[in-house]
Image (cartoon, rainbow, N blue to C red; front, top):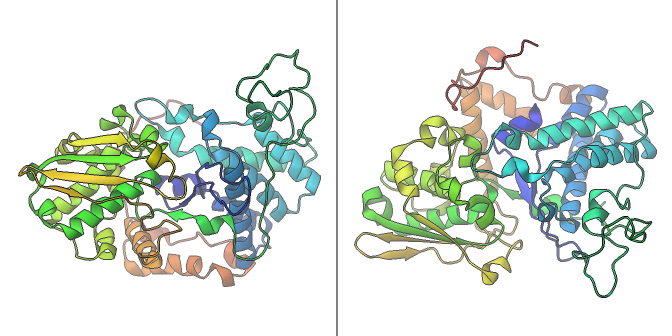
Length: 457
């Protein structure tokens, strides 16, 4: 539940699977840290995990997940990125519960052998609840596998070298001769070498001390949006702060907009079907919707603050910006139709995943065109040096918290232990998510009427 809630509110960061300082660690798989709830669950189950230990466990989980993203690109084989997080979840949950090395190996083996989610959940014209809950569902089976292993159930061993597990299946290390690449080889059972013993397709380097942890390369979202739209949003904010005429002229004053980005951004959030999103999950993966929604907010305000920092805070996208009312807002829809989203080609692709290479141009009806230029490191990106990240994230926390609580004092009370997690005692960790239910604000479902289940459970 906590993992799913984190995903629903985008209260997470993204790694890009790119660390050129370690040989072979530039596979470029992205993934989000939706898995901290696993650590909190272990703390609540055991009762002996203090805040400092919990933080170390979260760093460890991100280290496993982040380094796997650097050496094996799941998306290249249409596998959902949450697999790496599930592996990290099984390992860390087991370690916190006192599992043996063999039990952890069994749990990881079961997770990889039995529960591989494909990107089918992200394909199609409209995305569903299962896409938003993908990390939570994978976390669930990872914890279940770990608990089974701790009860004596034995799973596959040495899963990273197993020729029929996803790693060597998609990136074979045997049976490949000089005439054939790994993408064009004999996969029939007659190719005994292909399915025989062999090494893993990658070496996995994990940091245990110092400063080069995977989490240090995290990209945080400044509000709610698909992370690959961050470059376009930064370009838009820059244009709005430097050229007030854009917002003041209103939607009618805008002739057209052109966004240029890289792959995989173009393929994932530039699908033409995303020009007509009908679900919250589809809107969250529509470059046209995300940019139009932020621009519409600026137009409605009549302009934005002069500084980039304050403009981001004023325009920050909230859950309501993806609700049914926003989804079918005529003004937002009208702006979407003015957007042309183009692939920047090899020049843009080469700059990812080091950055998020994106540009946006806005042409007014008078013929004047304003260009953002190339955006590489928007606020929230690990390589951004201009934004006050803590201030932006504090604004985001308050924005989300005010949706939940009826008064600021209740929000501050809830945030206090989270902000002081390093000093919490084990008994305090067990109640870290507790809050006064009577102070909870009632909000109608932003999705409108939802289908009611037929089964009585």
